[in-house]
Length: 249
Image (cartoon, rainbow, N blue to C red; front, side, top):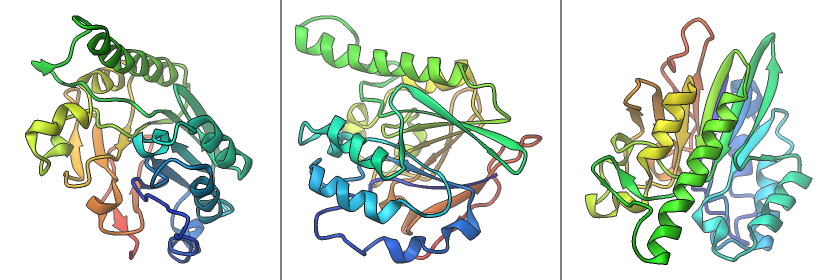
């Protein structure tokens, strides 16, 4: 199973034609494309329409989660609808499965949220705003666990925008780790089980990492990849990502 992935493309209304040339031959190199959030620059419907034109109709399934930029304009539902109308599957606490050459691939996704990591994290305690902040992460991590657990497929992939681990944040200032991800996402992935976890958001982070339970994690933020996308190979008998290839930017 060849999984292409990228996040943080930050498409603007002036991005028409910017990404499409690098994607024209993607169907020859990958079986599915996963988009790890921050698909738009400022979260507008106009930007979503450009994103839809750039990333749809590629000859392979395209699955996405939204990111914080996609929520900035308070139009996340409208953005998701524009993408869905173009044939892009948008996940939020949900999952989708595809049968590809006799292998069934399941993808569970959520935006995720921040909060930090074990021993240095926010908790659902104190002022209402703090409780709301921490509760949002709890709710989305729970939804990811439920979506992953419901998948009965040969290969399972967790797709988020925020990071489930600290390891792929290395390179970012430690002071902002709590705003880049949450250990609760990693716990959900380890508890439910997955063969690969993909996220974006951390532009100055590191591509490779793994959960405490040993599940491979890849930061596919476009600035980290330095390319239009990365391709990871997974096999049901040995679901550790093979050496990945990058497309030219």
